[in-house]
Image (cartoon, rainbow, N blue to C red; front, top):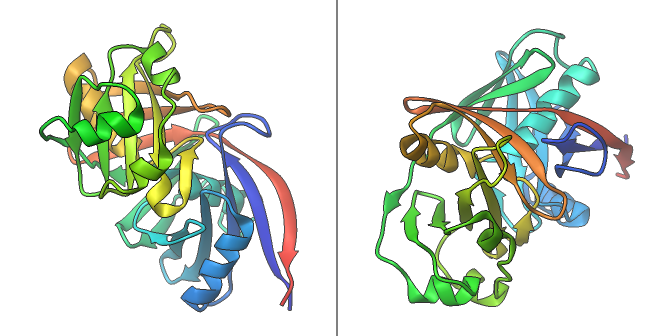
Length: 263
């Protein structure tokens, strides 16, 4: 039997913006090596696989190269698809069991809200290796269990970064978050996310990076409700609400491709 697969643009309000994720709803668990091969074939930053369970759904995420512990945009995309295709009851929360614990998604005022763990960074010594790989000197460097965060003096400095991805890949971290205050009054901060170590040179919009960006900018801007603009080529907007050790990510999604995997 053919297995359905979809591509959904997350953190986008129209097709071909935000971050595309492939979503594969399964009736039963699949072999991880098969899931990894599907993710490599799709060649998107994330492919998500979901299986119904007694309390909601199991959810796993794969880059073209590895399985990851946390992914925001593919979770948003999966929730959008499950509601759209009536795999989950409309208007009811969806509870996902994942490698990062239970994640809950709800529909609110035309947007999807994702309840994620906060992943705050801690300051680390400046790194000449990191500055060389990014091609510019950062103001501040921190890291959490996944990523390194580098703050830059301006939005323009973040836009102008042209990293050496081979050098970035050698740095021991899932990815590198670069950020600055936004020049636009519409947004609180801007960011980009580079993850060549897991097969994604630049992620168009990284939800899980905002689990770090939210606490980082909340402390500096003295506010708990923020709006982030990821200034990749595709671009995307992420609402962020910081509540203690949790972060609520807010956004919309659009289904752009429907198909089947031949088996």
